[in-house]
Amino acid sequence: MEARARLGPRLRSGWRSSRGLGQLRVALVHDWLTGMRGGEKCLEVLCRAFPDASIHTLIHDQGKLSPTIEGMTIHTSPLQRVPGITRHYRHWLPLMPWAARSWHVGDVDLVISLSHCVAKAVAVPAGVPHVCYCFTPMRYAWEGREAYLDGWSRRPVRRFLAGRLLDGLRSWDRATARGVTHFVAISQTVRRRIAASYDRTSVVIPPPVATDYYRPDPTQRRDDFYLVVSALVPYKRVDQAVSACSELGKRLVVIGEGTERPSLQRLAGPTVSFLGWQPDDVIRDHYRRCRALLFPGEEDFGIVPIEALACASPVLALRRGGVAETVDNAVGRVYEEPGAGPLAATIVAWEADGMPFDSALARSRAECYAEDRFRGRLLGHLTDVVARRDLDRVPPAPHF
Image 1 (cartoon, rainbow, N blue to C red):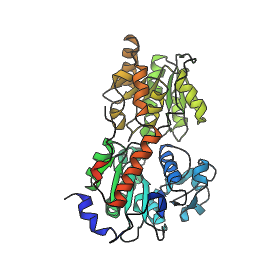
Image 2: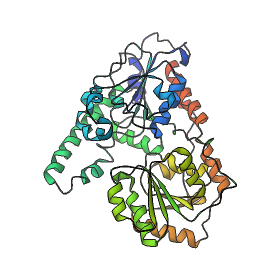
Image 3: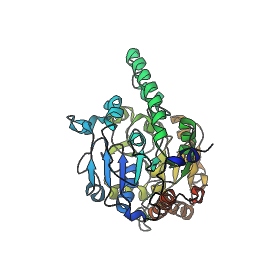
């Protein structure tokens, strides 16, 4: 039996389906607000749609979000009072389920959580629809579990204890999925994970990409460097791009910051440079000038490759996760097995083939993920949830 059929009786009898979305009392829930990444850009669209909504989050690093989000009413958890929490919040993972219990959304008509960790665990009043826009089931407990434990590989006792903790988090995460009435996945990859982890169905609505901002510049000439734009954390596998380019003697520019930066700099050869985090205009300039973007990690969706395609830049990517749904050999080159060796071989083969790339196709493909299309799909889905209409009429996600 489908999840929405099981959960249908929970919806309030005689519920206010005749009210427009703009009239609803809405609560938004987000794991944490520490910077403007892909998840926050999704939240920003909802903030514009529901400017009177409240936001509930674990922690808020004030001033690090867009003016749209900063202008909302934001409620944090007890973790906000921990000194230095905005720099070390991931170390507090064991206490996040406890902190999420402090969220009280009040008397609302609709709850929308944007979740990859604990946001979907928010307690919702009886009969109120809870739509979870799911970036992925809790990464640390599911597909990212081994990567998380690898950080303790030299400390076997701590690794064992961390494993037991993650087992408990997995059980908790599965249990809290029952509080969600409707799941929305950001990609087909995440849709399959939701089914495997929670035994729940979901619709797919890809996240927005700022294609009006990320555009080609016909006056800009291509340079000879490869580019990585990423958080420098283990699961992004930036080390593979650094190793491949160092081995080949290819120029590589890395834009991003994170815990892995010191080890990546030790690994890097003289042709690799690290710029740290950069503003959007600098990132766009590098998209427009790079030989190609390198994307060696397995992502839930992958906004960065779409931004690069929007700027008519080729993408060389591992054909895993959400990127397998958006990138192919017509707009760069994909490879099958992870590792610095396969990536290096892909770079060599692509250059030997004359660096084939269809710039017009890249741009048109990126436009499928424009913000106005995301807004239309998501608000249309929310309207169907509110009106309890046939949810199968959500516009299908682009598929390539």
